[in-house]
Image 1: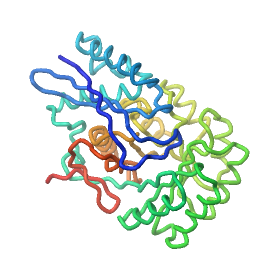
Image 2: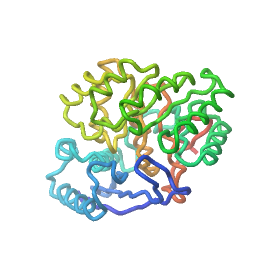
Image 3: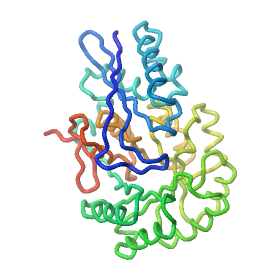
Image 4: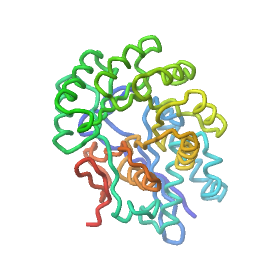
Length: 342
């Protein structure tokens, strides 16, 4: 067995405004595992200041070097990867994908299911990036034109009054039966300010708000979830919580209305499956979101999502963000992503 890695940066078509600043380049590495002429490929993708196992490109490549050596010496295997890399979610995701691809014949098929075979499509939301009012308004118009029925808008970047008016404009044109509105605050509001924000958003029939306050304030988040007029979804809150008992404690303490899962941030494939198991036992719905992976990582996440019967729109429409991307048969039409057979 021979493992190696390659740095494969992606350039954004338009600088992407996130809660962690403006991204112009997406740092990404492909890890490959070769055995008997078959090559399995996985993607290790990071977001600076958010990915817990990333500090710098130099540090990350040292980690990848160590991992490939461990695979080559059979110290790290498909069976023990989730244990050895438990606290390194982006690296674990790439390694898990490479092993799964190798297992399935090196065809970049990670889960041989109806999505991978072009039979099943997945509903997705249209993401509105942070920026000035004109930029966000233009994105909204395009997403509606493209046939999306669920729109997700980042809030907390510009002044809330402007963001609220953008949401109000959409709602004045389309009722909640026609267009579902989600918002993502990325922890932008204080526990004191958040209740007022939630009350205002409730007037617009908002489907849910992601992470209204910063992660780590479990009791404050529980209070918000208990009294909020709109459902609250956890995202950043789940990062770094990799122990099963700690996951149970978080879910039972906060009692969120939804959780949002990103395999590269939330424990790789194995950690994500555990979150789904534990949240489902507590009747907490979930949806999946990419962490801006290339088409390789995105396809793996789509196939993982398709392993479950989940009718909620997922956050998987990120493959068209880049100037160049890996060739892919992933297609998006009218708010649905699917793997084209053509």
